[in-house]
Length: 126
Image (cartoon, rainbow, N blue to C red; front, side):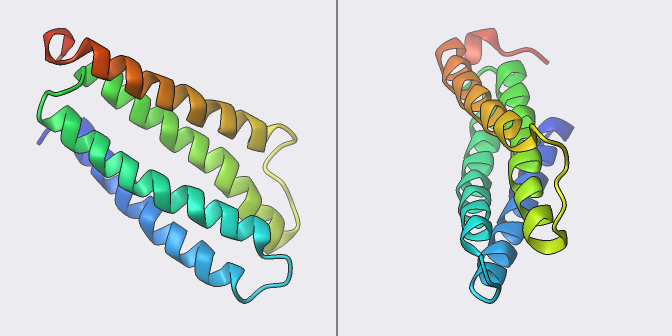
């Protein structure tokens, strides 16, 4: 398993861990609805990143585009979910446009997943 695939699997595990933690915290804090949304996003993307790592590892999607898609999905999660967690936990934000930027990055990451699947094994690089 190459380093890019390993990083996707590690990001998946971290997203899953944080998703469970955020969901649990949401059940115990006032105004935890936003935190519950972040937990849901993290848990869904944890499974998606794990699946993407498997697809890249098996050469079923373009390696270059698949790894790029994973990195963009992770960046989107950090901005979107990280900003929500900071707001709920500390009452501060990352920066004004962090949530919409994170959301846009996640949409772009999913578009790249679709593109990587259309490129398939024949377009794999590295």
